[in-house]
Image 1 (spheres, rainbow, N blue to C red):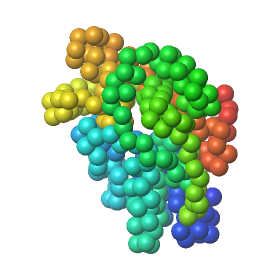
Image 2 (tube, rainbow, N blue to C red):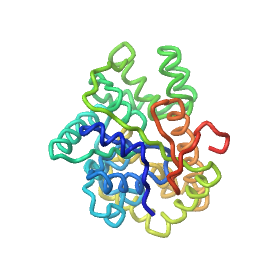
Image 3 (cartoon, rainbow, N blue to C red):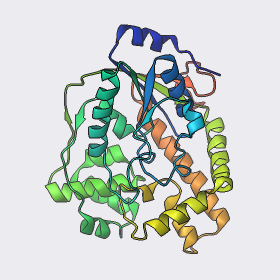
Image 4 (cartoon, rainbow, N blue to C red):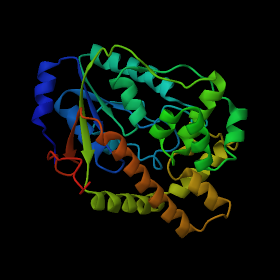
Length: 310
């Protein structure tokens, strides 16, 4: 079934240099809708999922298969070595170049992904300072509990701490690293945005979404998830810490399983629970964005995302 969304047709007609953005929580059906949009509007898909950037993790990150791509060119998928640190600064540079290239060839860029910081960097013109990784400091910060990290950041930059939240360990560590390195908060600057954007949000009722997440985790194990992570560890024995493919959902939990810390059933349950929590955080991020037109991932019908159903 293909999705036809009239408001996007009008947007494309009125904005020959327009860019379509398809976002929303994991497992909501973004990939299919993005490909449908690309097929309808002579487009090419550009990845904005922070983990689908990494190589050797196609199953773990649910990167689109060749069948799912339906012959549509896809960019910025599986293009970074998983032991490489990759940040929003790196993404913005690559995405800007890719958008320009797609438009130059007379095609419609269709950005697809659920990483809010990546999409805001492009659509709101955020420009971030360049703060190189400080691996020694990261090692020290890794020893603290997540709640302690949040309290440390709150003392230095309350606004940033409130925005990141108590549970997002990776971003808390990075924010503290930047603060300690620069001795000030890293406030993004706004630049002029050279494109017009249409933001389409894809969601499912919470019960349906959680069922799909649970089913996806079970399917991952059947299709070779553990084998993929094992091959990753063998290929890259020196596991890096932050902003790398080793932080893809499921990988840290699988490493706990390999070391004997948790059982197979505990591994599956942790992956399901953590992915559901991640989907909830994604929706919390996007609900406040008034630019987004929300549709159901299975029918394309418009919805009110603030409904209790979601």
